[in-house]
Length: 296
Ligand code: NAD
Image 1 (tube, rainbow, N blue to C red):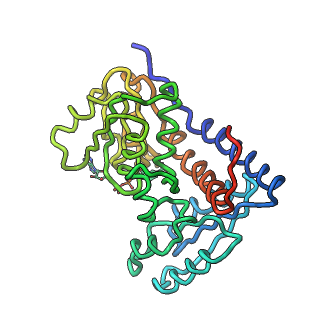
Image 2 (image 1 turned 180 degrees about the vertical axis):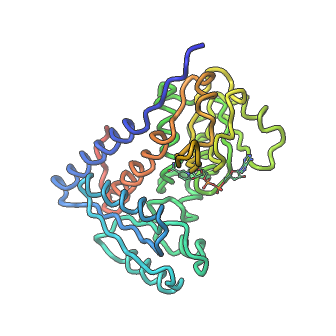
């Protein structure tokens, strides 16, 4: 049995970032525009601080303007909504996101609803969710799900048409939007979740498996159809042999003996999220200025 091909998310994300940087330079030289991307961070969650710093670095590396707004963990919802109103009105900011999770005194749904859909680079506003789900299109698409589809296409010759795709997880952040994107790619999509009966048999039907659960190494090699493509979204920190390490929702060692292609954790889906975020900032800037970007 040959081992699965490793899908190099880091390299694919770098190539996407380079294309975004080239189009950003084109936008500057042809239209005098520099896209601006802002991130709002409430509180001091250590993981969020790392994400926010990395997002800022990637934004600048692409030639865009990066802004960070920090609020204390004690900030009220009204204070956060005031920052959002300011960003909605700021012409230098083409896109922004509010880093989740938020402190418990703030309702995330009200926060997402307050973001101008045209600047919603996370793709979480109901208008963007509806555009994706209805197939109308033209909205901003969530970054991690888009990254998953790019990786799946890279492994499957760019064509997912007719593929039996099994998504594990139904969150609004990953599971549901990735299911809609796969449907738009003409896959036959099954969305499984914590109440799915006989999950193992369901997963075994998949030519393409997207695991977004948040349970370390849950999907074992014997759940996977031989030759299937496996996209592992999970990021789980575990203690092993006295060391802390990150693992996915898929048991990589047993899965790679069966799968045709598989994403590693880290170095798979993770790097794609930020690459797709800066791509969304570029798209938002072009759309707001009614400019058609050059194709790749
Ligand atoms: P979530 O907790 O919101 O959703 C988890 C989903 O898994 C739920 O829909 C639930 O029904 C399902 N589930 C839970 N237990 C299950 C079980 N035993 N069997 C089948 N389904 C089960 O999580 P999320 O936000 O969708 O994130 C999922 C994972 O992806 C997490 O590990 C998270 O850290 C990771 N993640 C990674 C990125 C990235 O950039 N790579 C981005 C977002 C999330």
